[in-house]
Image (cartoon, rainbow, N blue to C red; front, side, top):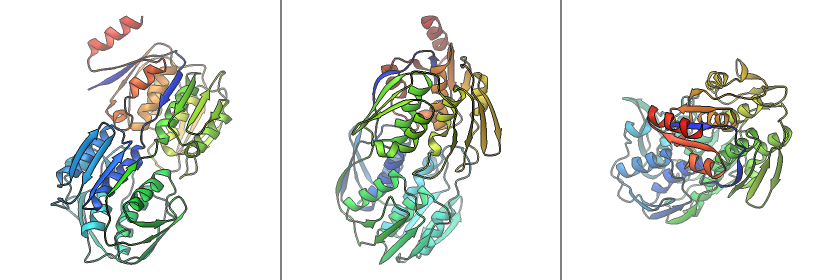
Length: 430
């Protein structure tokens, strides 16, 4: 198993380039199989989740050509089966997007119940409710969700709670249904908008993405398209908080500042200087941070995927902060790991009470999921001494070249796979 070994204490300084949005790319790759013509997708992040989904798509018969590291051509004309193998689903939850894509195109899909990060239950019932409203029958057979319909018919769907996954899945299926579909209480996240824009570039007729009412007029078929994925707001936010926690000065490039407003607002609140440009954001943390309170909410509120990163910053801030998690019930598992490094945090229900400390000390910690793993790396960068982060396979699911980008900002971090390499690093950094 690979680990990160980190010598903390260096402020991060310099420029970092942000890649394509993983969460947008997962929906877009699934939607790409909905036409029999070739689709070219650019600005694709080269991370494990993306590579697993591309493999799943090729196994069901689509042709996948990697043009370059960040560009792929997909042709779905040769898809021979509408059943996806469990091997792929257990690795990434977002494989369930193939349900909406296959159901829309072939009126039948069979996808195993999903896996992914263990951050709490993410029920699939809203997806199934949407498919049923469109005229499909759904059942669970042998651990798989089976959805089928003679034809899909447009309808009015109200989502009981805001769900990015359900919004994208229903939007894909409805884009090839007969007639008119309205999705109310739909998710407004930038990656929902990006999937809708991609479908529209293939000939779909979707209006209102980015608002809480999406209107879709079904079309009979979709066509070829070339599309570039939006920048990753969570990767950008992670580097912004890394600058804050290490008292650094980082220019985060290739971003859409509008997508980062909730993150930027909190950074300003805790005492950072944030400068916005057309496609970049600069974060400067010249003094100790202040405490604040945060509650995670659906977009445009503060993102749940940025919750562990702000907790690390607040654990180093002056005063007491409260972070309330309203999206996932299991998202504070990393707190025990931060405690090993000297953080003082008390979890009560869905809130964490954080008592700011003067500093962290290096320790051996384990990443429980993707975003918490990135947050533990930030903690290691801010800590005195050496930190080892185990189970970095989670981090590699969503961050491309994470250690390389951090090193370019002055971090002392290496990816290692043996105790001997850890000792060598410790000797080298003294």
